[in-house]
Length: 261
Image (cartoon, rainbow, N blue to C red):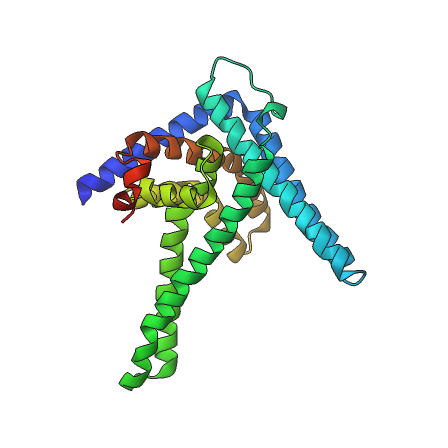
């Protein structure tokens, strides 16, 4: 176990170091796309607030439009980072990395599959917990245990299938196939991914902790640092981690089911 953790830590160090080099060389382009995602997300919330009492149909339409715009920018960011990794000596324009209509549709369908899988995992946990009602154990105890196990199961599933957009952009995989490949490449890599997420999410946890201590000034500067440094770095780091996992993947499209669990 100790050796495995050492290996995991080493892999995380490699990913962070490579991500920092790529981010440092192309910071303004990557940060611009991250900033556009931030603006789109906040503009959507602001628009929903002003339109909620005006017209619900228009509010839903605008929410769909902003969600589509956010997804497009997100996919464009992934595609841009892939181009940076594959063509380090060639200048890449952001415009040339816009996703195709097919990729956007596949991503939206993939998101629907993603949510259905998450709901399905939670439903299975609840169904497994249901027979324990007849054991005499208090209902609130069973509920708390079922909810806790369900949350853990959802988190594990989320980590395992969250790389599906990478396959849509990088390998042009269909929605369901991209989820299967995400399950396959994350087999045996969960601890490494978790450690990477802990490192990348450390500043956000620190920000929440400082807010809890009621140190707003320090929390503000930590949030600024997280928004302008950690968020762009995280996007590159996860893309590099994906490339490392796909490079180490031994299965193929015809035998993928045996590499999922």
